Length: 248
Ligand SMILES: Nc1ncnc2c1ncn2[C@@H]1O[C@H](COP(=O)(O)OP(=O)(O)OP(=O)(O)O)[C@@H](O)[C@H]1O
Image 1: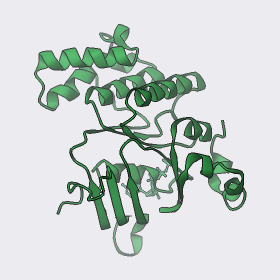
Image 2 (image 1 turned 90 degrees about the vertical axis):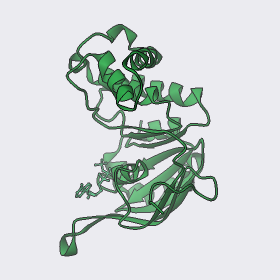
Image 3 (image 1 turned 180 degrees about the vertical axis):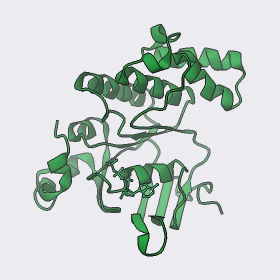
Image 4 (image 1 turned 45 degrees about the horizontal axis):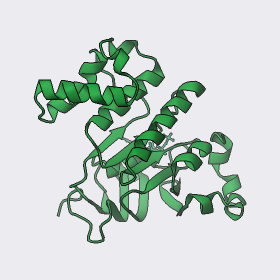
């Protein structure tokens, strides 16, 4: 059974059983994730939070099939199309429109159809007026909108976002976050898993919070419970997140 192909018996989008990811070998091995067991159901909005290096990106990459577990298992419902957006989008030296169309063409659409769907996706993220501009001339916030258009053009049932607003200025942060909110609200059945250092954003977007420390999931709770008074007391107050993270 492939690590990233078998459907979960319990109808989960993702099921991780004692999953670990190690980088390197022998004494130099780094345990980026360990003993991670969890299920993510369709329509959940899951925030991954924790200090730099705690394993958020590694977990997202694992879910997206970019990494395989070194041990343990990942089961994933492959009938659900996935798209991932990274902290800093990769933008090709092409027009905005071609940046979106190319992804669709590479997945087998005709160039005409790819162009049509790309324009629709750009309209959906408010970027149609920039379609013919060189993509590399866009601002950071516009480039992240482009990345969201590229993701949405694939009509994903599962959207993975790795700190989608952390490289943006406050204005662009708000714009891109509200775009993510709109995309998620349009499709309540879409599963969204995102990494963030911004606790306000986590409250606004998430239904469930996974708090990671050194590759382990220390808390896995509904968002209200995570931010409930009891849990914000020790030991969470001590966590790096509240020192280095953004609390707005
Ligand atoms: N390809 C790699 N090779 C070696 N080590 C890696 C690799 N990718 C990640 N790591 C290490 O694995 C650990 C987890 O990294 P990861 O990027 O998942 O953390 P993160 O929580 O996303 O951090 P940040 O908040 O800074 O983005 C870190 O110690 C990191 O240095």
